Image (cartoon, rainbow over all chains, first blue to last red; front, side):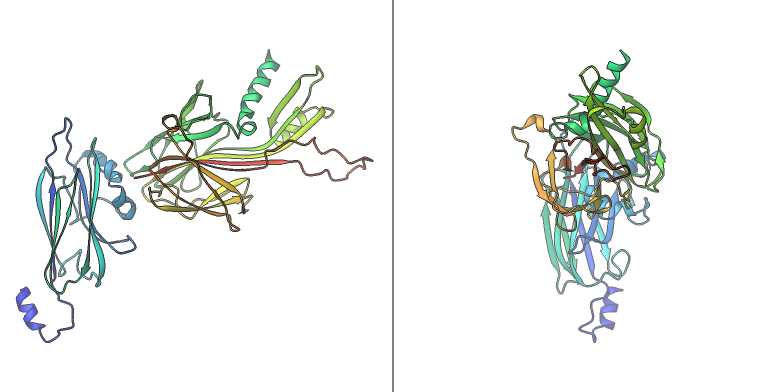
Length: 170
Length: 280
């Protein structure tokens, strides 16, 4: 589908590609602690002024009864102030359950929300993780959207996050 | 007994205005930033030299005003005043910002009693006429307007309104949106107008575990604005005051005692203190 689209559009060299990809790999590290709870994780794109351009994922305990799991969303402090407190959780396509330690892949395409219609410009991918009775860590990867050629970017966490890799394809 | 108790109570009540230099009045809320699945906070109130420890006197709750985001008054629950602190719960039924304040507007008076012992009194303008003897010797009266407050936000911060009396804080940066390393800007108003050139201090909590106060000092500009860049996360005690110097003898009709002549304005002391939480 994407190939046929690019063929169809090959005459419009200056037009932005219609289906650029943003693929994300993020590691939740295995931690040797007495009391372990899976971290709450938020992934979003921010503009240079730190306003939120798109929420990509929020992992939290959304199935707890009486919204008890929402209580700790504020511990994703930056996400909470930038957009969490404006949202009515859960949000379709964004919120899902917390994950165990491991590596997770998230794939986004400019052909679909939340990336559809994202204006060209400078952004930062932000990954924030906060764990009950544990720590909080936030990683940022700056990039320009859309990319002219494939790019691979990385940030390394030290406590609540492992490696976060961002692969951008035109 | 009764009168000595009253004097004692009055003296305690006046600790706040009289020892503003030495003792700090503050509230400490259990949380400042909450989600809508939270339904209450509990708040401590105390007066002490050390931030934020309860080791001197409780902050009395007789002038407590809790205001909901929609401006309505909230009735605190489970209020109690102990030896060193007061405590109460605030039910959070709405989303937005709650203002938890102790507001003392009125008069303080001191005079020499008939037995030669000093008398002190604090109360409203109306009570002054009936409770302070008209012929009190060496009467000194000071107007006070003192506000001690803190803020708690459920969900998205909402706008804060001011009453137009005494010193008040008007947010430019919302008081529940403070982060370490970031600059926050506020405006101080005196009776609803910009309080220009006023000294403002912000002292981080945890004074017991360090050798210096580490107080940040700044001054309001012509617009009453001031900014603070928070050096570290934690609770901060923000303070500003004006007046509070020597009390002049109460303004009595000038020499010649012409009836109906307007008395000179009484000296006035205004104070503002807020507990602010700065997140990492």
